[in-house]
Amino acid sequence: MKNIAFIINPVSGSKETQNAKRKLPKLIMQTLDSEQWLPNIAFTEYAGHATEMAYQFARMGFDAVVAVGGDGTVNEVARGLKDSKTALGIIPMGSGNGFARHLNIPIRPQKALELINHSEPICVDYGLANGRLFVSTCGTGFDAVIADHFAGSNKRGFATYFQNIIHDVFSYTPQTYHLVGDGLDVTHKAFLITFANANQWGYEALIAPKASLQDGKMDIMLMSSHALLGSASLALRLFAGSIDDSHFMNTIRAKEVTLEREEAAPFHIDGDPVEMEKDIHIKIVPDGLHVLVEKRF
Image (cartoon, rainbow, N blue to C red; front, side, top):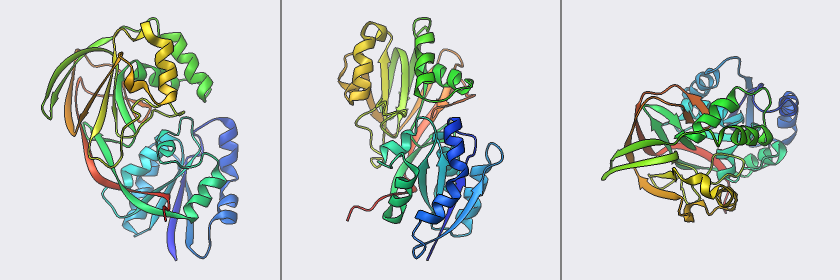
Protein backbone atom coordinates (compact mmCIF):
# COMPACT_ATOMS: atom_id res chain seq x y z
CA MET A 1 0.00 0.00 0.00
CA LYS A 2 1.38 3.40 -1.02
CA ASN A 3 0.61 6.72 0.66
CA ILE A 4 -0.69 9.49 -1.59
CA ALA A 5 -1.79 13.01 -0.68
CA PHE A 6 -4.08 15.27 -2.71
CA ILE A 7 -3.53 19.01 -2.22
CA ILE A 8 -6.53 20.91 -3.57
CA ASN A 9 -6.48 24.62 -4.35
CA PRO A 10 -10.18 25.51 -3.99
CA VAL A 11 -9.95 28.92 -5.69
CA SER A 12 -7.92 28.37 -8.90
CA GLY A 13 -9.73 28.09 -12.22
CA SER A 14 -13.26 29.14 -13.21
CA LYS A 15 -16.32 29.04 -10.94
CA GLU A 16 -17.34 25.82 -12.68
CA THR A 17 -13.94 24.33 -11.86
CA GLN A 18 -14.17 25.48 -8.26
CA ASN A 19 -17.55 23.74 -7.94
CA ALA A 20 -16.05 20.57 -9.40
CA LYS A 21 -13.28 20.64 -6.79
CA ARG A 22 -15.81 20.51 -3.99
CA LYS A 23 -16.99 17.18 -5.38
CA LEU A 24 -13.48 15.88 -5.94
CA PRO A 25 -12.95 14.07 -2.59
CA LYS A 26 -15.89 11.80 -3.41
CA LEU A 27 -14.53 11.19 -6.92
CA ILE A 28 -11.11 10.36 -5.49
CA MET A 29 -12.56 7.74 -3.15
CA GLN A 30 -14.64 6.26 -5.99
CA THR A 31 -11.88 6.15 -8.61
CA LEU A 32 -8.58 5.63 -6.82
CA ASP A 33 -7.43 2.02 -6.58
CA SER A 34 -7.86 1.30 -2.85
CA GLU A 35 -5.67 -1.79 -3.06
CA GLN A 36 -2.78 0.32 -4.33
CA TRP A 37 -3.18 3.76 -2.72
CA LEU A 38 -4.03 5.10 0.75
CA PRO A 39 -5.24 8.70 0.17
CA ASN A 40 -4.98 11.82 2.30
CA ILE A 41 -6.93 14.90 1.12
CA ALA A 42 -6.01 18.47 2.10
CA PHE A 43 -7.20 21.93 1.01
CA THR A 44 -4.97 24.99 0.76
CA GLU A 45 -5.92 28.03 2.81
CA TYR A 46 -3.39 30.67 1.68
CA ALA A 47 -0.61 31.34 -0.82
CA GLY A 48 2.35 29.07 -0.14
CA HIS A 49 0.28 26.59 1.88
CA ALA A 50 0.60 23.92 -0.81
CA THR A 51 4.40 24.15 -0.62
CA GLU A 52 4.36 23.76 3.15
CA MET A 53 2.05 20.74 3.04
CA ALA A 54 3.93 19.07 0.18
CA TYR A 55 7.21 19.47 2.04
CA GLN A 56 5.73 17.86 5.15
CA PHE A 57 4.22 14.98 3.18
CA ALA A 58 7.62 14.38 1.57
CA ARG A 59 9.32 14.38 4.97
CA MET A 60 6.73 11.84 6.16
CA GLY A 61 7.79 9.55 3.32
CA PHE A 62 4.66 9.77 1.15
CA ASP A 63 5.05 8.06 -2.21
CA ALA A 64 3.19 10.78 -4.11
CA VAL A 65 1.61 14.19 -3.62
CA VAL A 66 -0.98 15.27 -6.17
CA ALA A 67 -1.47 18.93 -7.05
CA VAL A 68 -5.14 19.64 -7.79
CA GLY A 69 -5.40 22.98 -9.54
CA GLY A 70 -3.63 24.98 -12.20
CA ASP A 71 -0.01 25.68 -13.03
CA GLY A 72 0.34 27.88 -9.96
CA THR A 73 -0.73 25.05 -7.65
CA VAL A 74 1.55 22.62 -9.48
CA ASN A 75 4.42 25.07 -8.98
CA GLU A 76 3.71 25.39 -5.26
CA VAL A 77 3.57 21.63 -4.73
CA ALA A 78 6.71 21.09 -6.81
CA ARG A 79 8.57 23.57 -4.59
CA GLY A 80 7.82 21.35 -1.62
CA LEU A 81 8.81 18.12 -3.40
CA LYS A 82 11.94 19.14 -5.32
CA ASP A 83 15.04 17.07 -4.61
CA SER A 84 12.99 14.47 -2.72
CA LYS A 85 11.89 10.94 -3.62
CA THR A 86 8.19 11.84 -3.39
CA ALA A 87 6.55 12.00 -6.82
CA LEU A 88 4.39 14.87 -8.04
CA GLY A 89 1.00 13.89 -9.45
CA ILE A 90 -1.38 16.29 -11.18
CA ILE A 91 -5.15 16.62 -11.46
CA PRO A 92 -5.29 19.62 -13.84
CA MET A 93 -8.13 21.89 -12.77
CA GLY A 94 -6.74 25.35 -13.48
CA SER A 95 -6.83 27.53 -16.57
CA GLY A 96 -3.86 26.79 -18.86
CA ASN A 97 -2.61 23.50 -17.31
CA GLY A 98 0.63 23.71 -19.28
CA PHE A 99 2.78 21.26 -17.31
CA ALA A 100 0.04 18.63 -17.24
CA ARG A 101 -0.51 18.96 -20.98
CA HIS A 102 3.21 18.50 -21.65
CA LEU A 103 3.10 15.28 -19.60
CA ASN A 104 -0.02 14.08 -21.47
CA ILE A 105 -2.09 14.04 -18.30
CA PRO A 106 -5.83 14.10 -19.14
CA ILE A 107 -7.68 17.33 -18.41
CA ARG A 108 -10.79 15.51 -17.15
CA PRO A 109 -10.38 14.80 -13.40
CA GLN A 110 -11.67 11.23 -13.56
CA LYS A 111 -9.32 10.35 -16.42
CA ALA A 112 -6.40 11.95 -14.56
CA LEU A 113 -7.27 9.86 -11.49
CA GLU A 114 -7.45 6.72 -13.59
CA LEU A 115 -3.99 7.52 -14.94
CA ILE A 116 -2.66 7.60 -11.35
CA ASN A 117 -3.89 4.02 -10.94
CA HIS A 118 -1.69 3.05 -13.90
CA SER A 119 1.23 5.40 -13.36
CA GLU A 120 4.95 5.28 -12.71
CA PRO A 121 7.37 7.94 -11.44
CA ILE A 122 9.98 9.43 -13.75
CA CYS A 123 12.70 12.00 -13.10
CA VAL A 124 12.39 15.40 -14.80
CA ASP A 125 14.26 18.68 -14.68
CA TYR A 126 13.11 21.87 -13.03
CA GLY A 127 14.34 25.42 -13.42
CA LEU A 128 15.37 28.23 -11.10
CA ALA A 129 15.09 31.97 -11.82
CA ASN A 130 17.02 33.87 -9.15
CA GLY A 131 16.37 30.86 -6.93
CA ARG A 132 12.62 30.67 -7.66
CA LEU A 133 11.46 27.33 -9.04
CA PHE A 134 9.64 26.89 -12.33
CA VAL A 135 8.52 23.62 -13.90
CA SER A 136 7.21 24.81 -17.27
CA THR A 137 8.33 28.28 -18.34
CA CYS A 138 9.38 31.65 -17.08
CA GLY A 139 9.92 34.81 -19.05
CA THR A 140 9.71 38.51 -19.64
CA GLY A 141 8.27 40.76 -22.31
CA PHE A 142 4.78 40.70 -23.73
CA ASP A 143 3.82 37.30 -22.27
CA ALA A 144 4.75 38.54 -18.78
CA VAL A 145 2.58 41.63 -19.28
CA ILE A 146 -0.34 39.40 -20.26
CA ALA A 147 0.28 37.14 -17.25
CA ASP A 148 0.14 40.20 -15.00
CA HIS A 149 -3.14 41.43 -16.50
CA PHE A 150 -4.67 37.94 -16.56
CA ALA A 151 -3.90 37.47 -12.86
CA GLY A 152 -5.86 40.64 -12.13
CA SER A 153 -8.90 39.60 -14.18
CA ASN A 154 -12.09 38.53 -12.46
CA LYS A 155 -12.77 35.97 -15.18
CA ARG A 156 -10.55 33.00 -16.04
CA GLY A 157 -10.20 30.79 -19.10
CA PHE A 158 -8.79 31.12 -22.60
CA ALA A 159 -11.31 33.75 -23.72
CA THR A 160 -10.13 36.16 -21.02
CA TYR A 161 -6.50 35.38 -21.83
CA PHE A 162 -7.11 36.11 -25.52
CA GLN A 163 -8.96 39.35 -24.75
CA ASN A 164 -5.94 40.57 -22.78
CA ILE A 165 -3.68 39.79 -25.74
CA ILE A 166 -5.87 41.78 -28.15
CA HIS A 167 -6.11 44.69 -25.72
CA ASP A 168 -2.34 45.05 -25.19
CA VAL A 169 -0.60 43.72 -28.28
CA PHE A 170 -0.47 46.94 -30.31
CA SER A 171 0.60 49.19 -27.44
CA TYR A 172 3.46 47.03 -26.17
CA THR A 173 7.02 48.29 -26.78
CA PRO A 174 9.71 45.58 -27.27
CA GLN A 175 12.76 45.72 -25.00
CA THR A 176 16.45 44.93 -25.48
CA TYR A 177 17.85 41.93 -23.61
CA HIS A 178 21.39 40.68 -23.04
CA LEU A 179 22.03 36.96 -22.46
CA VAL A 180 25.36 35.82 -21.08
CA GLY A 181 26.65 32.45 -19.84
CA ASP A 182 27.02 28.87 -21.07
CA GLY A 183 29.08 30.13 -24.02
CA LEU A 184 26.54 32.86 -24.85
CA ASP A 185 27.03 36.60 -25.14
CA VAL A 186 24.17 37.91 -27.26
CA THR A 187 21.95 40.98 -27.34
CA HIS A 188 18.44 40.93 -28.81
CA LYS A 189 15.59 43.41 -29.05
CA ALA A 190 12.64 41.12 -28.52
CA PHE A 191 8.86 41.15 -28.23
CA LEU A 192 9.21 38.46 -25.60
CA ILE A 193 11.71 35.97 -24.27
CA THR A 194 10.64 32.65 -22.77
CA PHE A 195 12.85 30.22 -20.87
CA ALA A 196 11.21 26.85 -21.43
CA ASN A 197 11.71 23.66 -19.48
CA ALA A 198 8.40 22.30 -20.82
CA ASN A 199 7.01 22.89 -24.29
CA GLN A 200 4.13 25.29 -23.63
CA TRP A 201 2.59 28.17 -21.72
CA GLY A 202 -0.71 26.28 -21.41
CA TYR A 203 -3.86 25.93 -23.52
CA GLU A 204 -1.64 23.91 -25.95
CA ALA A 205 0.18 27.14 -26.87
CA LEU A 206 3.47 25.46 -27.80
CA ILE A 207 6.02 28.23 -27.39
CA ALA A 208 8.91 25.72 -27.33
CA PRO A 209 7.73 22.66 -29.29
CA LYS A 210 11.00 20.74 -28.98
CA ALA A 211 11.62 21.42 -25.27
CA SER A 212 12.34 18.33 -23.19
CA LEU A 213 11.93 17.83 -19.45
CA GLN A 214 14.78 15.34 -19.38
CA ASP A 215 17.68 16.88 -21.31
CA GLY A 216 19.20 19.12 -18.62
CA LYS A 217 18.69 22.22 -20.79
CA MET A 218 16.17 24.99 -21.37
CA ASP A 219 14.94 26.21 -24.73
CA ILE A 220 15.27 29.99 -24.78
CA MET A 221 12.69 31.34 -27.23
CA LEU A 222 13.21 34.89 -28.46
CA MET A 223 10.39 36.45 -30.45
CA SER A 224 11.51 39.23 -32.79
CA SER A 225 10.67 42.84 -32.06
CA HIS A 226 9.00 42.81 -35.50
CA ALA A 227 6.67 39.96 -34.52
CA LEU A 228 3.51 41.99 -35.12
CA LEU A 229 4.26 41.85 -38.84
CA GLY A 230 3.71 38.10 -38.70
CA SER A 231 1.18 37.93 -35.87
CA ALA A 232 -1.39 35.82 -37.74
CA SER A 233 1.21 33.30 -38.87
CA LEU A 234 2.81 33.18 -35.42
CA ALA A 235 -0.56 32.52 -33.77
CA LEU A 236 -1.24 29.60 -36.11
CA ARG A 237 2.26 28.20 -35.63
CA LEU A 238 1.99 28.56 -31.85
CA PHE A 239 -0.89 26.08 -31.70
CA ALA A 240 0.37 23.91 -34.57
CA GLY A 241 3.67 23.21 -32.81
CA SER A 242 5.83 24.88 -35.44
CA ILE A 243 6.52 28.35 -34.05
CA ASP A 244 10.22 27.56 -33.82
CA ASP A 245 10.30 27.35 -37.64
CA SER A 246 9.21 30.98 -37.99
CA HIS A 247 11.84 33.53 -39.03
CA PHE A 248 10.41 35.76 -36.28
CA MET A 249 11.72 33.28 -33.67
CA ASN A 250 15.22 32.51 -32.48
CA THR A 251 15.91 29.42 -30.34
CA ILE A 252 18.88 29.07 -28.02
CA ARG A 253 19.50 26.00 -25.85
CA ALA A 254 21.48 26.34 -22.63
CA LYS A 255 21.89 24.95 -19.13
CA GLU A 256 22.44 28.25 -17.34
CA VAL A 257 22.29 31.93 -18.35
CA THR A 258 21.98 35.40 -16.91
CA LEU A 259 19.36 37.69 -18.40
CA GLU A 260 20.33 41.36 -18.25
CA ARG A 261 17.48 43.82 -18.83
CA GLU A 262 17.43 47.56 -19.39
CA GLU A 263 15.17 47.95 -16.36
CA ALA A 264 13.04 45.89 -14.01
CA ALA A 265 9.88 44.85 -15.87
CA PRO A 266 7.08 42.27 -15.59
CA PHE A 267 8.28 38.68 -15.24
CA HIS A 268 6.30 35.47 -14.93
CA ILE A 269 7.02 32.07 -13.44
CA ASP A 270 4.77 29.28 -14.71
CA GLY A 271 2.29 31.91 -15.86
CA ASP A 272 2.05 33.77 -12.55
CA PRO A 273 3.43 37.34 -12.36
CA VAL A 274 6.27 37.82 -9.87
CA GLU A 275 8.45 40.69 -8.69
CA MET A 276 11.97 40.13 -9.99
CA GLU A 277 15.27 42.00 -10.05
CA LYS A 278 16.51 43.67 -13.25
CA ASP A 279 19.11 40.93 -13.87
CA ILE A 280 17.97 37.33 -13.55
CA HIS A 281 20.08 34.19 -13.27
CA ILE A 282 18.25 31.21 -14.79
CA LYS A 283 19.37 27.61 -14.69
CA ILE A 284 18.09 24.07 -15.11
CA VAL A 285 18.42 21.51 -12.31
CA PRO A 286 18.60 18.06 -13.98
CA ASP A 287 16.49 15.19 -12.61
CA GLY A 288 15.47 17.20 -9.57
CA LEU A 289 11.78 16.29 -9.54
CA HIS A 290 9.86 13.01 -9.70
CA VAL A 291 6.50 13.08 -11.48
CA LEU A 292 3.76 10.51 -12.04
CA VAL A 293 3.07 9.74 -15.70
CA GLU A 294 1.22 6.99 -17.50
CA LYS A 295 3.02 3.67 -17.21
CA ARG A 296 4.66 2.90 -20.51
CA PHE A 297 4.80 -0.89 -20.28
